[in-house]
Length: 260
Image 1 (tube, rainbow, N blue to C red):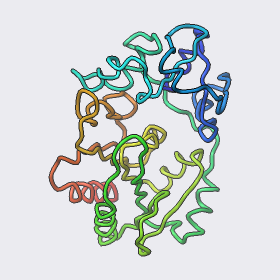
Image 2 (image 1 turned 90 degrees about the vertical axis):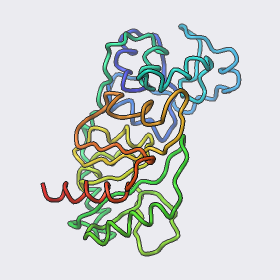
Image 3 (image 1 turned 45 degrees about the vertical axis):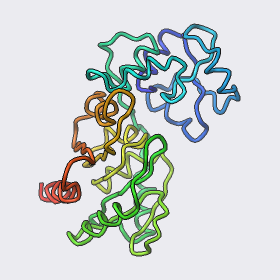
C-alpha cells in the first residue's frame, strides 16, 4: 500500500498511521511523508464507522477492510491485492507501484553480522519461514530444505526463526538492513510475507513460496504474486506449494544462480 504513498501525498487526502517498527518504510518512498506511529484508534470502531473520505480514519489492512465484498475481489479474474489498494485509495487502474529506495547503506553492518556468525564470504542462502497473514509451514519442510541446501555446499541461514535444530544458524537484523542483507548473501528462499515486498527490488535471487490455499476469490499466488502486482520480475521465482518436487526446484534454481 505504501508503494502508492507518493500519489496519495500529492492529493493530500490521507495520513498514514504506521507501526513503530515500520516507521522507516514510508521514507523509502518519499522524505516528505509525515509519519504518525501507533496512534490509538479502536479498530472495532474503524470497521463499523469508517468511510472512504477526507477526515475519517479507515483501516487499510486487507484483513480489516470494512467492505468485505471489496476484499473478495482479490484473486478473481486476475485482480490482486494491489488492485484493491488502488480502489481503496481512489487511484487510477494504470498507476504502477513505486519501488522502495534504500538510499542509506547498511552494508558494513551486514558484513559485521555475518562475520560474527562466521558466514561472511560463505555461499549463504537466507531462509525465511515466518509470515503473519498466511499459514506457516511445518518445521520439517524447512529442515528438509536446509539439509538439501547444505548437501549442495550452501550455508543455510534462518531468519528470525525458532527451529529446534541446532545444526542450522539463525540471524536477526533490523528491517532497515533487509535490502543490503539480501544483496550481500545473494539468495533468499522465503514464505510469502511482507518481508518479500520489502526486498522485492533487491538484486538477490528471490524464491518465494506460496502455500496452496484459497485467498479470498483465488489462490494465494494469484492474489499476492510479486510479479502480478508489478513489484518485481528481477531474479524472481514464485512457486506454489501444490507443485510437485518443490525442494528439487528450489535446489536447481540455487545451483543455477551460483553457476551464472
